[in-house]
Image (cartoon, rainbow over all chains, first blue to last red; front, side, top):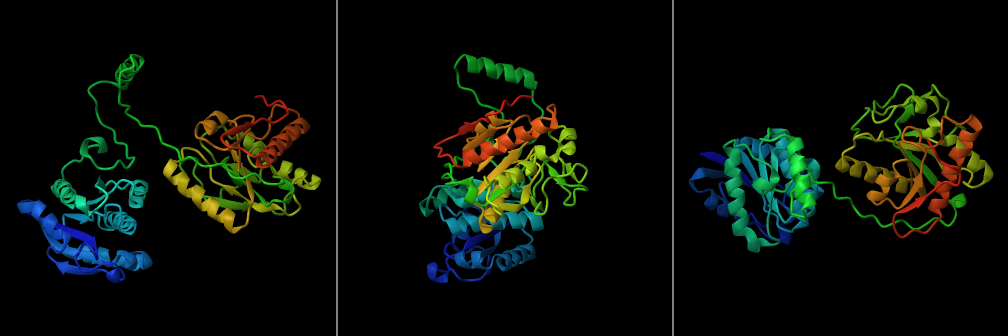
Length: 353
Length: 72
């Protein structure tokens, strides 16, 4: 019989409400609280060997300690699968559930299933983690949906424990993680594409095989009164970095950004900089790095007073922009934005190749 | 933020707010086929356009074109 560990917050473990939200990680032998409901759904297929709980606040205030303790306790019980939640629309709980699943899958290599309402912020983290071993099943908004949630999670957990192959999200019912797998189809892509086109042309409904990314809508920032008095910074995705590529950027799919100082420079000299980028021919950029980092123009405008003296931020931000995945780029954008804010920058020029 | 890009249709499609039309993907800020002084002047015009974009109130995706001919 398969062994399941169930991880719950203090409330659903039956320990107590908000007054117990500071409780550290603890273990109850067998099934306790909501885990009893899970055990009932698992029936003779699997047994809940331990219920692990954490205080909702404790987890977020002592995240590293909490995750360490949970990993340690899970490892002791040698389960086949770990179930976390369901968290419904509870934000703290949902975020914790997503992080716990990620940590357990990463550190112990165990499959995890969690459940929450798809709008729970934890679902966003789950999508970003994109962990092959973690599955998030959509639930209703509140504990009123507990019975149904536990039934679905129990069935899914049993399949994971048995090592069953889990198919794509739209067939299996978990929230999509954006993982694409190759699979052999009966008919070639050309045939499928033409079929889809004919169906589309006839105005009949069709299902795409590759849904396009949905972009965030960002309201435009207010304009600057005058750029002459604003602190300005330059970002570039051109791949122009100091010669030798000291931060080892790759020509594609970079996941980190860096700043390079041009504080003392009036221009960028060919041969001292190089473009690291696999998405365009970098020959001309190497000849004249100003095509991606227009420092000569910025200095000329500074001399004329269109940019205030000393108002140009003394380093430019760089990440070569080739094949960046939207979730990584979103994170990089947030990090750069936070740094710009910390440095008191008012306006930004972003050169994209 | 002003986005200087030769792929401005993509920038418009994803809803960037202030977009400046650049020269070409491998050389957004300038044109290597021009004499060096013209190339520098073109680059300056593109950056000036970006500054103008930062000073302009916009309500949605807006494309700013440099006043100098941008060709590639």
